Image (cartoon, rainbow, N blue to C red):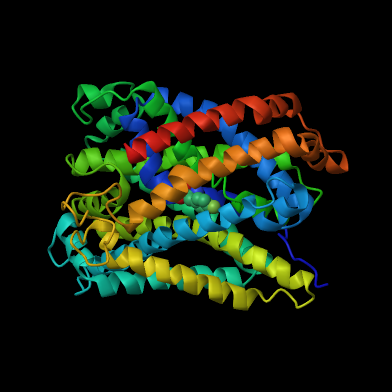
Length: 478
Ligand code: PFF
């Protein structure tokens, strides 16, 4: 059987895993949710959840992957009778997330190009339009959105085709440190704008957003908890097999516990840093701009760049940063799918057929991405492709406004917390935490968090997950 090639170094693995975790979720989700949900209070709850749920699921996923040496589907098949189907849930989530993630990634590429246009005064720049008008014009141009979305899918596919060591590791080992440096430059620029301090207050001072009318109602504790929990799962790429898949390529001599801890810490750090970059900019230069979601990135931030000296240079840097962040996440999503089919082909002695499977999976992703682009992230309103938008009976909006929300709702809202909950039940109550313990302590490694892990994986994490799941379902559907 052909050898299964993995990461060349622990640094490469760490950069790829952090790359998977750091993405659009950090840039438009975390800072805004933190500000709107009680600032520092949210951060404390987030950190508690990250320690008691995120870290536990991270250690579990990496250990299951490395132990079996298989992607998500193969890993559960080997380990468990009752949960042998669980990996397929991961593949489904990966497809659903990729559909909208690639569409958004395409928009980010478009905004790099737009700012290059602004820098040189070229026709493909803003042409005097403000952020909302540029975004509106782009949303009206479905073909352009589709083309950029497909360029993003193509880039993702090419990297995954290069394999784990050759493609993913190489791109992340360069891209992640670059992202960090660009982020630092953008933070310095944003925090030195006049008025930036209000952004910092919005993010960090409990109750500031309510007192200053940025939000109109104080969120209740369950909402804060489920918002923080949902954000944490999406942000750490957990509950859908991405970390099982990356773990399966990790060398047996590396320390799982330490790596898991580093991934959680770095992801949270970058989320906070992303906040220091986008939120002060918004408060200083576009005080009424949206604080979250696609509009934060594509309207508010563009207005910020339009209103600052040398704005197009910072615009290019910022959107490049977002493209890096998005692509290092999308490759991990595609790898969840491709790894499974490569494993199967290898078992049959047919080589791994990585290129062919990457192409087929990317083609399927392309179809979903086109759908999201055609209804313009929901902006098309009455687009014929937005078949989820209106109830034909009474013309009222249905539970999901558009394909983007629909795919997001099913994957992030339900499948990911459910996947993590079932994984904990599988480890805690079916195969036993010992299986993880043996893998973590291979080659004489220490498992300092053993006691904490055992209690959490059996009781605390599943309870936390249930709460998050309940809150998410309540939020999304009612
Ligand atoms: N963690 C990514 C983000 O914060 O944008 C999203 C993501 C990537 C989720 C990979 C799941 C995944 F497998």
